[in-house]
Length: 299
Image 1: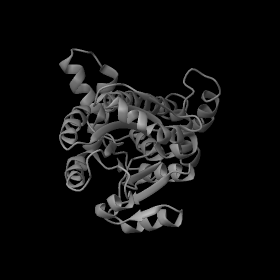
Image 2: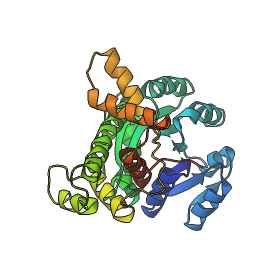
Image 3: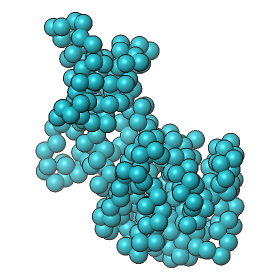
Image 4: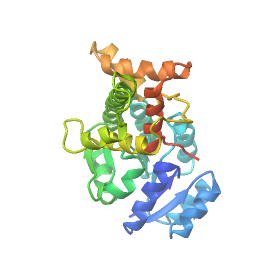
């Protein structure tokens, strides 16, 4: 299939490379021309402007995958809708708020095109292991995109369609809120090992044994274990951890529907406090974890 990947940051570039290697025709677009040049060396079609992207599709209907920060999606969408022909498919694969995706679906539909929300997880490891994708929007458009999704899931990722517009990003929002709590628990646990009554516990060795079929065996613990092997004291890590929006939105839903979420709330509060200077070994480890699996920067 022919598809344009617009936004070639950490995640976007991995998606583009995986699709290109899966023998799809990938049109690479980014505001930073250097990143477009890099993709061209790998055999992709480089497009330095949105108009070039549209022209690259020729007579076929454009499929545009946006991999940009949630705060710029509206602006980008407005620009694309001015030049895309009717019948195009626009995908938001970033971490947008589910209610924004529902609104954008209606706006795009008025222009005669389709908007699909795909919550995408897997970090930079998705390129090797396969992405986990949570999808909402038109079922017809979802069916059209299946060849792309099949490539992106390989070898061990997956994708599922959850229904109406916004549902994919809603499932991804809850996923990220859970992630906050899991990361916080690991960080606090390793801090207990480091600063508790036994002063010489090897944190890396604890991570190694935990990763061999213990109840907390996980990819996050694997990342944490490896972080501690290279930097056991978290030297030169400032310990400030940003909150990227998803847990905040999840807590808003929890409040609206009277759903108690104390673990998510506490993990969210730790991140807010870290930005105010309340840092410790656990927040340093949190910061390192987040950087290890993504920290989805867009250039």
